[in-house]
Image 1 (cartoon, rainbow, N blue to C red):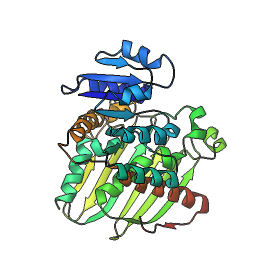
Image 2: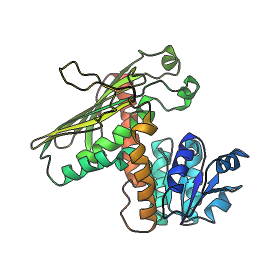
Image 3: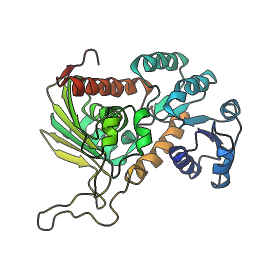
Image 4: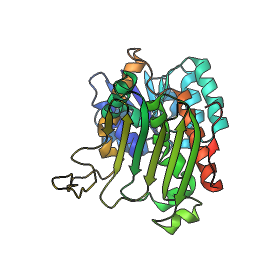
Length: 331
């Protein structure tokens, strides 16, 4: 099997590395719009080969991964499905709801499998949480709590193009939590503050935010996200139900210090960032992508479901600015 990777920045190189390590992948072809970048990456990564353009890439692979900037995703994805190439596209596949809806219509008309790279869905513990909820082992869900904190803020030059904290940081939980609960969100309330650095205010953004989701069946979820955690990168999801209370994301490397005797204390190897925290998820994501290409498993992250999180992110931003809850119609 040959897999293509378009875009060999930090994320693309990580994916290419994980793909090249899979037994069923014979070769990984690399392309990047920046001249010379793919060749440089290939020289440093065994099992890869650089190509000069997207058409060459798409004409010689069984599947392609898109890790280029968001504004390039719609054109590249349309090029891939036009050639019938199964695609895994980093989130988001488009920058706004209208553009994404039109793109999804094209994807579904093509019949080509397109996965969206929400890595939470591929994390073994989160996937097991999803399985237990669907199996009825949690019972009726009462409450979901999600925490997502960066260890350090992103480069401030990135902020104006990031889409804001709800589209960038919390978009993963806005995808994962409704996927876990399995019910439509009917109401959103969000609030945020600038507590880390003035650069966020200058970008018309916030660096700490909380979100409350109300689901159709009456359950609630609270999501909290921040741009600085002095102990490390922290992401947890807790689910409280009528039969069980479960958590994904608490282990020996969780950056959390308990004040209870014998309680958890963060060690020197606390997670420094998302690549380390979700390493198993990213490896599993590449493996499942190859299985979807072969028709061995169903698509675990279809394009249409990614529209839910973007609509919720836009509702969060509306709520933050207005100070009022936002009703979600037809989500």
